[in-house]
Each structure stands twice: as C-alpha cells, then as structure tokens.
Length: 231
Image (tube, rainbow, N blue to C red; front, side):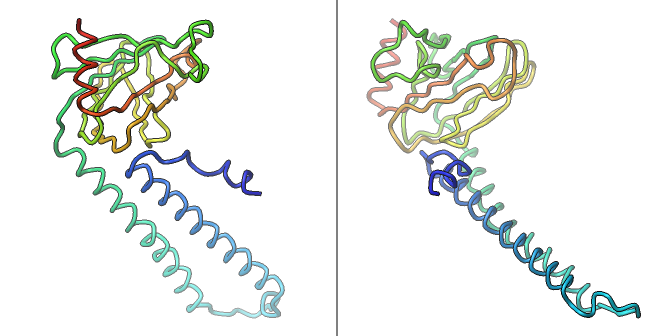
C-alpha cells in the first residue's frame, strides 16, 4: 500500500525549497481529497433526501451562500502557502554570487561560468561501455556541472536550436530553454552530492539521451575543480 501511494508523491527533496514544494503538493492533494469526499457525501444526501423529489419550488438562499463561501475559503487555504512559497523563491533571486549559463543543443548541454573566464564545456551522456561502477545508466555525463554548496547561483538558461527544458526533479527545478530567450533561475544548494535530471521537453530523436548532472561540492573543492578544468 505504501508503494502504491509513493508513486503519486514527488521525488525525495534535496533542498529546503524542494521540501516546501513537496509539503505544498501534499497539502493541496489532501485539501482536494477532502473537497471530493464532501461533494460526494452531499450528493448522496441530496439523492436520498425526501426534499429532492418535491415538485413545489423551494428557495435555498442559505445553500447558495454556502456554495459561495466554501470555494472562497478553499482558495484562501491554497493562497496563503502558495504566496509564502513564492516569497521564499523571490528572496533567492535578490542576489547571486556565481552565474552559470546553460545552453541546450540537440542533444547535449553546454555550461559557461560567466564569472570565471575560460571555464566552459559541453556535457554529453556517457555511453554504456564507459560507465564506472555505481554510475546510473542514461543519467551520467562525461562533464558534470560542478557548483559550490551554500552559494546563491544564478542559472541563465537558453537554447541554440529547438526548445529544451533544464530539469532537476529532486530540487524542484524546471525551466524551459528557448532559442533567443534567456531565462534566469537563482538557486542555493544546501546539500553536497550529485543530482541528476533530464530534458523534460520533447526536443527530437535523442530527447531522452541528454541528461543533466549537477555536482554540489564544498567551496575549496570547487576552486580546485575550476583550476583543474582550465589547465
């Protein structure tokens, strides 16, 4: 039973923002389930009530009032956590310490660190014969996007051809990459680790073979990686 309901949940949250998104998703689903149960019970009550089949005209002013007040209360219950989540996301967009430009191609990703001259590379999916032990199939890449943890990073996402989507489900990140449009996303990674994603926009024949791998590490390791990549 747990596995059945687990299939309808979001992925395991790997950041504070993603955990907020997961909580709001569960809250919204619970609220909608309560509304569904209430409507079904009310429908059954009306169908079995003796007043339902009366031919004379009956005024239901109080019922009309309830049908106006209840939807308003439901919208208010959804609005308060939604606005709080948007406010928290807006705080992350106020400032950034590092800018990474992400460009989608058919069918790979390019990364350019704008604050570090000369640091740019392409990221292709690893073939099956080049995978190391423990690396996930169809998700591992030859060049990961390495970023420091606890640092506000601005991602500038665009495309060189068709529409792509830069998506990391465990971090609640999904932004379309469109040619001629520069979309920005600010994010802070609180947890060290490797996070995988995929292009979530159908962009052609090899759409399912352009994964995303973001490696979050400590600042000292990030500096060593930058110097080693540019050498």
